[in-house]
Image 1 (spheres, helix red, strand yellow):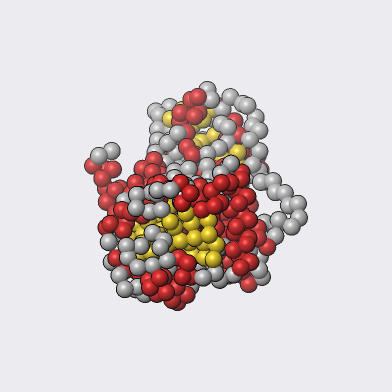
Image 2 (cartoon, one colour):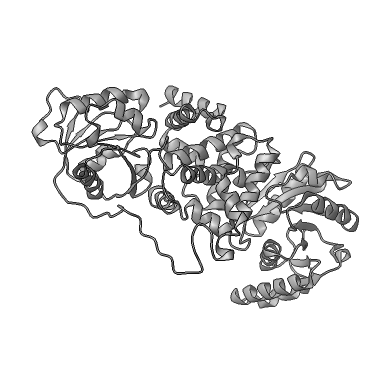
Length: 528
């Protein structure tokens, strides 16, 4: 092939991109960086001009300015004739997309492949507008398209295997990592990510913590690059809300995807995030936030710890040993009460949590604080098992291995000296602390376990394999772990335990455990 006409990837040398907005111009740039010829179409001359400036700027930055000669911009749909692959990136409106595909079907006959970059609409419904839906599939890039490595390749109800193979190869040759998914609402990333936002919004709505606290807990405690509220501001609260509503409606109002009124209120007041200067955070003023009680400065005292058995704070015993704290087992025949500085219960509900907590309450002096992991039991329930709840707090032990911040819930009458002592204990272990209100599942366990559960539903429904879902969530959303990887590390049985606790407290189907997750949990018992 003549070098002046661009490179050829397999049988593909020319890409047609419909829509010169943020996604369309980013996809066009990605193809040009790979040396392909690109015809970029839009009805707006202004959008095309802006797209061309954007593309030229980034080609120059990459020292590939010569590739601009492979770009054609047009307002004439007929100019897409001869393209090997069409990638549609126009607004998320089913009627508009179907009408556009019907026109493209005539202009670009087979063997041209027709793809849609839709993130929320049915590929099968879009493909119904063409004569041969076998040549239609989803090719969902993530914003910014030239940077983010993931492409979801969506198999519609009648998409031919050869169509999928050609798109997968194209994505790889564009430098992307393709994951193949079934055509279901939200595909992989937009569907599995719903609990990340949904549970955070519910925690905010219930007054458990501020949006700043939740973001801090998620980022410092879970290792996420951005918390849910910072990320919604970046994406656009309206965009995130629209995606949630679309998935909720397409699934016939599945409660796991129910939108939250807080987002509706934010959209109504046009507080949409960074693009409007104001969302959950302010961007039009210098707004700083310091997490209260998050200092990691401790007392550096030689702690005398009384520690129970249990697996819901799996790393705590080892961390106390590494810090050279003195450890006594609560179940030992003799406990030196005079040396005890703090009592810690790390057991879950199914591991004798109540028994260990009551034992700790009886054996320790009244001035010694007691803390108990609270991922599968609410604070008020734990308090009812104690004679001296004024020295008690619950903590998130389940997520300790994943960050450097621990979430704490104080009993309603917690003495100040006990609060200070509990905070100092964790600070001396290297953890910052965040005190929040009572909540079933705390903050991080609630979000992470809901993500793992959603991923299990997706695998069970044949949306994609477990490995592909983990890959998609790490590459498409920058999660530190895939949701199923998280489940394996936490333990699927403990994930199910948190969800059962949430279901019991709220009585909502939103928290029902995925059948596949239950099978994974049973498998752990057989093959620990």
